[in-house]
Amino acid sequence: MPADICVPSNREATVLQLYGNTRSRATRCLWMLEEIGQPYELIERSTRADDLQTPDYLRLNPNARIPTLVDGDLVLWESMAINLYLAQKFDGPMHCGPEIAGLASQWSIWAMLEMDGLLLDLLMHRALLAEFARDPSHAERAELLLARPLRILNDALAARTYLAGDGFTVADLNVASILAWGRIARLDLSACPHIARWLGECLARPAYARMRALSGRS
Image (cartoon, rainbow, N blue to C red; front, top):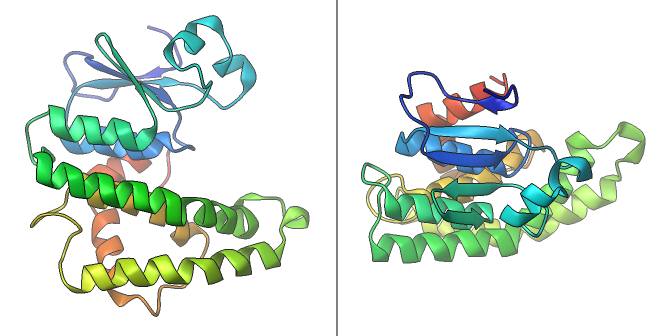
């Protein structure tokens, strides 16, 4: 077996293949795979050109990006689409019908458009970039612009425990996977108590801990 393939323990057969790594947006797909409990293998791919711009990988994902999911003859890219597919295909606690899938698509697309880029900018300039390359004005601008979408999300969670349905669904997973960056970036949620409560519950799930353990993070 190739050394760059990580097969989760106590799985009998590999069914799903996920190309990516534990330091990218592939983590939300790994979290989803842990939630649904299906056998899978993580095929390590970095963001380097020599990893992604190979003929074999470009046949799977012509964008030369990660993650990419392979399920038999089906090849899917874009992390949110992968998770929505997994939620609809497999039975179990994460399975959803059309109503939940619609709400999950709504919140997932909204979060990508309204928060993803801003949270990434905040993360880069508060945690990931070398100290000399960080610009406090970028972080301040990102946090200022996040106020409006955070207010919308907080108001939604004031009226319900979860974003769609009566329990945790792919809608919560997808949005929480973006807001998890806020924890690392010291995003101030003091004005959003409902988000703080909800995010804490989402990130306390055992499947999230198992995903984190794949990269040796606590």
